[in-house]
Picture 1: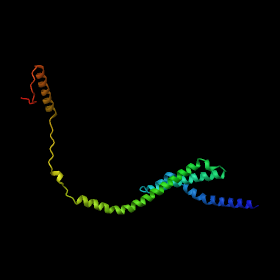
Picture 2: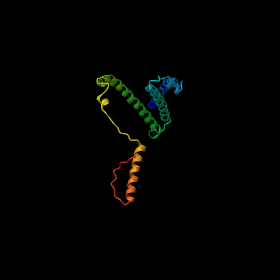
Picture 3: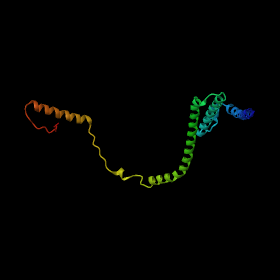
Picture 4: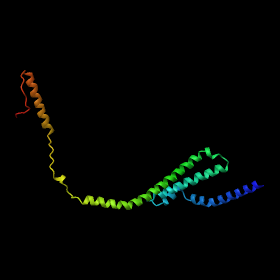
Length: 174
């Protein structure tokens, strides 16, 4: 007799839970996922992530509850992988949100760093001494250099063929 009362209480609790859940799910599915994401402000990606996580959590949780109500062993069921995946998404959202809060705090401190940087850049002369140092790079015309080398090579060959051993200086008379 006592067991039947426990079961009755459980069923009443389940009925109340479903009754309370139904309007929330209807509100959630009254608009498409895309429309919900478009409602989010364009600048706030965290809001879009939150909407996506909410949808994923509701869908997977309802599937989990359905499987439990049918008596399926969910411990080895793939639904557990989906629950872990959604959990990881929600943890990522929390980390990003915490990082954004830290970035805002750091942004206040970075104002001082910006001031130091600007003072360092503007505090030095606009034109440094490096601009006034002479720097000469010698360029030879490629055709002229090749021509000189070719003439020098021919002179060396001629001197070898005549049997004379002359010292070639590399100077060419024109």
